Structures are given as structure tokens and as C-alpha cells.
Image (cartoon, rainbow, N blue to C red; front, side, top):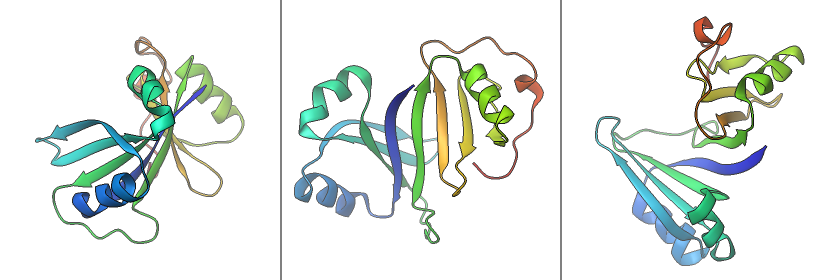
Length: 146
């Protein structure tokens, strides 16, 4: 398993970049604009982690700016922690066997979401190429929020 990033939703991208970059000292390493989804993702890394971030896309902070105004309360501005795993199906099975609900199953063989006992959303991403679609994951519905 490898730590990837922490996602934080922001309401004012310019003010957030001023805080995270100008004041805190993180550096922007890449940006993605999604016209269809109406959001911008900005990935930041600490100066000492920049080379690793550019090579491995970790460790990073992901600022998510939704273009349509939204109020974030109750911790909604914090999104999730993300980890790459060697085998997403084995990781999800281990969690499920331990009593963890798979909120967003890895139907695509690439991505799943679970929650910690405290409700922290955790994204699991398959290392390398997605696994071929397989049961029980392929037909498993989403459960709760992820």
C-alpha cells in the first residue's frame, strides 16, 4: 500500500492557493479542469516532496474547487484519503471480512471507497492497470455515502 493524497474541497480557489502555496509553502505540481464535471483539481506538494510527486503523484494535497457554489459544513470540505493497493479485490475482501462496508465497490477493477470507524472516506486505487471486472464486485451496488 502507498499513500497518495488528501482531498480538500475549497470555495475560493485563489484564496486557497494563496494560503497553501504563498503562505504555507506548498507548490502546485499539476492542475486538471473538468468542464463536464464543472470542477478544477489542483495538486500540491511540499518542496522536499516535489520530485517524488512529479514521478509518483504522491504525497500530495488535492484542492477540489467545484465551479457551482456550494456551502461545506459538517466536515464536507474534507474529501478523502487515497491509497494505492497491489490488489484492489484482495484489499476490499480483507476489509469486508473484517466487517467494513464497501461503500463504492471496485466494479471497474480500479477504484473503491470505504469509511473508517470515524466516518473518514478512504479511496483505494489499483496499482497499475485496472483488474478485469469480477464478481461479486461487478454487480455490487453502492452502499451509503462515499
